[in-house]
Length: 475
View 1 (cartoon, rainbow, N blue to C red):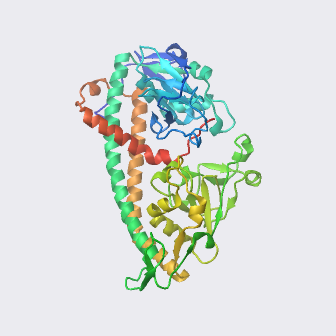
View 2 (view 1 turned 180 degrees about the vertical axis):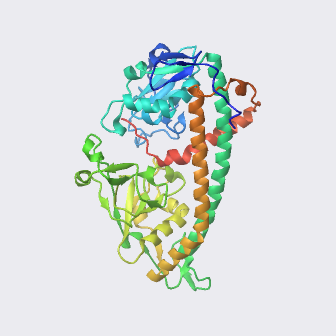
View 3 (view 1 turned 45 degrees about the horizontal axis):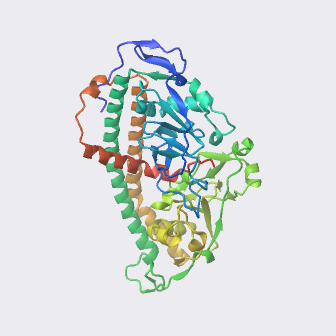
């Protein structure tokens, strides 16, 4: 896939320690010399509302806020939002350090908390889209941003303008964009194929789990009507009761980001972005014991069933896991614990195997924010086998799904490697480590239909990552 790429024939010292050597004919310039900040405001808020993600760059937001509910942006009106033209660089200044910036392909409006920049005619904006999202540049953005903790770091325009960028001639920028777009499309196709395999395997796994947790393991068992439409018939000796009578619910919270001491402890703090595995052993963020004592979050003992109750991922699944260490959770999570008649592993299996149905049962139709309604969840009916049968079901499922889980894990790893390859290749190309001019000139032409399909795949590919991460919005 590298097309036998080689370094440029000659390099020069950039004069910037963190940049090192760059191709001899490339320019090294401060950002202020080729871009300016734009502060044009919407007069009526009617334009397309845009959002910025580290995964997909700048895209149209899926939903607009309503008069009744401003939860999506915490803004009562879009009047005064910043206008964005195609080709403008839009930056979430609080999250520039993790790549939450990009060049907009469409016109629209963005949060007043964002910065909008416009480049001169000598620059291809999408070259900067690739350049500024590399680990090299986001690392620099983090180093020069101002703030106490990561989630409150801000990259202000005056600091951003002082930073140095490297710029090939405009014609070469276009060649680099052409090459990277082509490679990115091919990688998306590979990833999409692997994601389809994962989806098929997960559906097979869910079918096995659903059968076991709603019918048991004995194919000849006598059944009775459960009285619950989605559940249908259940084994005659099982009970059917409301979830709230069998489990406890523990909510969470976020300690103040203004207190740095709260975020220097060793207690794993679980948020939806950590719910990517069935067992929680560690998390991205950690908090201190004082954070637990002085905030709404609580310490959850090992063995609880952790459920995401508010996140974009609830559009398609309910992330559920069991923690094998003591953790705290944020406000978008719930921890479920048995009152005695249920094994927590059975609760986990029940939610995992029935999640498509439970998504319908537990969520409010027409809500502007994806969330599980506590009352719907607590009052839902669940099947309750005897405890020894619950353990038998859990042991059966662990054995039956072992091979499926292994293939799914391997395929996820392959996807991760493809994404790492893409990130490394982009970085090597836009920083001049590899010369793609000849390769770009010899690429096959692709039809508009192919490119349109690949744009759809691009959005699909990153959806799972984006939905499960919590995006920080300023009011």
